[in-house]
Length: 96
Image (tube, rainbow, N blue to C red; front, side, top):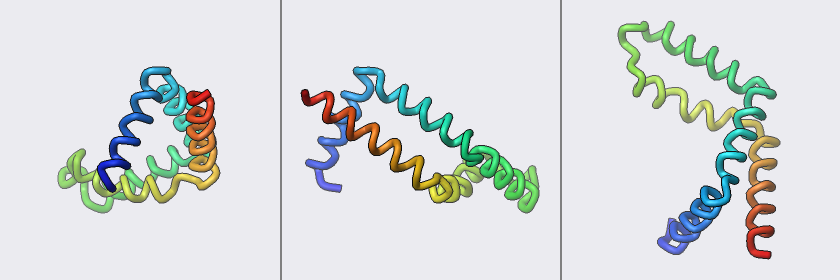
């Protein structure tokens, strides 16, 4: 990622935080993930990992490292598209 891209990301992030839109988007994301069953699916996957490795051998950091890529992969495209559309609309509206 170039420094210009990083700067743009920072500016967008600051606008989202300043207006409270970031919190609204987080809540929307949480709700969509619950609605589509993603949360339950990931919870089941966590239990499987813990069962396979043994409770004593799995730390929180290990579990996070194990489930993060799976969790990202399993987010439905429709949820990603909806959030991206909301962010784009926010940016257009913010420029007007």
